[in-house]
Image (spheres, rainbow, N blue to C red):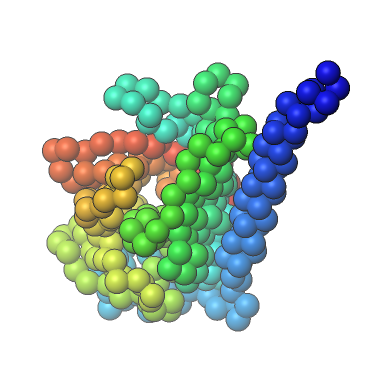
Length: 273
């Protein structure tokens, strides 16, 4: 009987060991990406208001509103947030997350999502250079969602562009951003290292109302297609030197009759680096 019990126990021990190793490797990878994304304003470069005077009027209004003159131009940001994710036509589940964004390197979004009462899925979405991934595990142990591949990286690049709304320093001419006029209330911006143009809708006071791109939407089978994607800003707040979205809705089909809201976000705090 002891021998039989040992034989039955060995596969369980092997499974636990494999899960523990996978959990450790996920944590090490996330920490490595988190560290690589840390990029500080080492030259203490500050915002020069005069550099936006030649931009299209919506862009000038937006940057003057978001960044006060003389503010240090942060190169990365740590955003702490909470909100809800849509998992069905009428079903939303709560999440809490932290995100590090570096305009020149990528992002890491680490989240805890409540799926069944106290049961939580933990993991991360990340983009680093031209590589991206999605990796989540039930209770941070049992793998439930893993994706990689070039199409996912293209999709993550579109997401990254929109989330620069939390890092407006990256959208300044001093950081190499290029702006063109859309219409009376809209302007289009691209940033160094990205060929994805983002359209911003700005209020008369310069408040960001919407930001949108054409983003790769990747299906579970790996196929993808370009689709309108973006955020609708419902409230803003000043965190440190910058005024950025504090409440927003993320949606596919933004600006169309087929808009599909899938995330509601409430920003709790932002650290500028």
